[in-house]
Image (cartoon, rainbow over all chains, first blue to last red):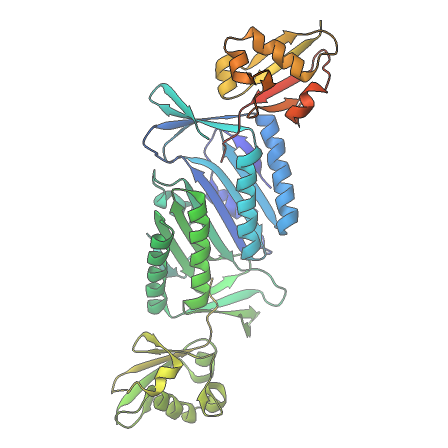
Amino acid sequence: MVLALQKEDIDIGALISASRTNNDGAQIVFIGCVRDDGNMDALEIEAFVPVAEKDLADIAAEAMERFSLNSVDIVHRYGRLALGETIVVILVGAGHRPEAYEGSRFIIEKLKEKVPIWKQELSGNARGEWVH
Amino acid sequence: MVLALQKEDIDIGALISASRTNNDGAQIVFIGCVRDDGNMDALEIEAFVPVAEKDLADIAAEAMERFSLNSVDIVHRYGRLALGETIVVILVGAGHRPEAYEGSRFIIEKLKEKVPIWKQELSGNARGEWVH
Amino acid sequence: MPQITIRSFARFRQLFGEMNTVSVPEGTSVLGALLAFAKTQKDGMDELFAGGKLGSHIILMYNRERIDSDDAKTIHTADGDEIVIYPPVSGG
Amino acid sequence: MPQITIRSFARFRQLFGEMNTVSVPEGTSVLGALLAFAKTQKDGMDELFAGGKLGSHIILMYNRERIDSDDAKTIHTADGDEIVIYPPVSGG
């Protein structure tokens, strides 16, 4: 189980390989990306790291239990990210696909509701809106 | 858009990178794996390749349209696969996550319902049950 | 007589082999060609027909298009046609 | 007098800076400490309080545990305590 906040990019292929076991019938990977909405050319992501780490661990444990998952990995980036970059990767492994889909969705919704991470739009050197 | 049936393993990280554009707010990757159910040590996957290729293209086009997806990639393997190996990768990109989750689920359900691919359990050199 | 190719997958391939041909009179229906084929194979009738009716679990293609079992008796074959038979799929 | 650390994130960090301390009388509530803090900052009252009430969009932590806004007036602070304030989150 990898749970991390980091500035560096995420090697998604390596995460998938490391997490896979013979008990997995399905893995679901959710990847959040910096989408070009026309108002910005980058995002600045701010995190309250120690609290966010604890929250990710709590969410992962709750998802494992509720959806009988084999594994959960969550890696969220912070700092300045260009258009098209990876913001977050959520990887779940399960015996069967319904649990994998439901567990994955549960985690991203909880993350967006609770974990102290914020996004601000950047345009050149100008700081724009905080995304909500 | 990659739509393929192949014997070779799938480079999932490369697929994700190649598919990503600045219009993607979310990518969902579904990975089907050979799960150890205790009765087998490998799967033999048989496909009616030209028909399966056409079906994958039809399913991808329908999913793109119905869920306003930016991209769909589907790679399914055939031949002999050991426990823990990747059977299928379905990658969708969308502006927002609800469409990405729903589109991904739609594709795997359609694939399992319609595409002429079959799985047989192998134990040593003995052929076992056709999986249903 | 016209030659019809019967192509089988999965369980049916194991039982009958992948490719077979069957000779049937001009204008024979898809159903008729399958019946003629089943009679040439050990266990063919048991596997493909139940009480004279084509098994409901069998998926049919006629010249690479899926067809409904109910249409198998109204589609007439011609020399060189291909009928594909397979059991329910299980990919993914 | 006891010193309370006020830590701010996102919009509040931009307005007030990340770390501040405020000195309050012994036994001051979390709400009281926030009120004292807001008064020391330009726009502090407008941003954090509306009609004397703490803004409903503000998320509070007291010594690294989230607390309900309603409990801010019943929790009493002590020297060295930390209060964290932040706006709604938007990760993922």
